[in-house]
Image 1 (cartoon, helix red, strand yellow):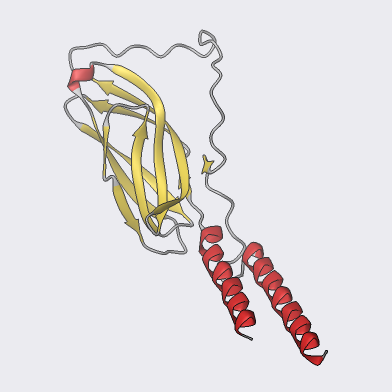
Image 2 (cartoon, rainbow, N blue to C red):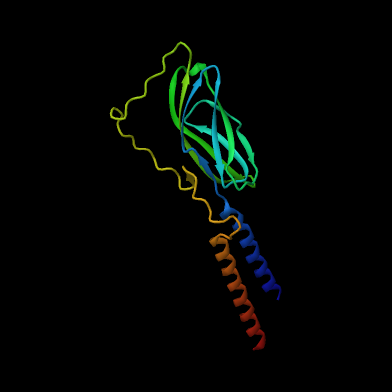
Length: 194
């Protein structure tokens, strides 16, 4: 009986630990931004956060400027949560156009649960220096960029049908665990008879 209780406890713990990780989701809009930041100042950008609650870490990728805040706590909400980011310019970099990403990392229990990158074109404009012109689309040679990692999304995921419904994966895990437990009970009960 002690072995049966140990196996049952292990199955329940696995099911409980797997469910929160499967439920993590994050959507950010817009999926692309173009900003001009004065070299001696800052610019704000507005975003909406969908389907997420918890700590959100924000950073710039391939853009050598700074962003504030770097961490936000998002409260649970059935509506999108509006956030505002401030990007600070840097006069020492001169007038430049940077193509990169704003990365949003959804944290759960101190680890990254989900990540989204928003494509960003940020112009650092220094007074007295001309800003380089963007090449026209026909002059720009096609560039091959590596595909984004599978764990990162670039657009908000489709809205769930209802927030009160169980997701299919945790439900399937619970059903599989139940089948295993019932099978163990039947096997142990038969063993005792013989």
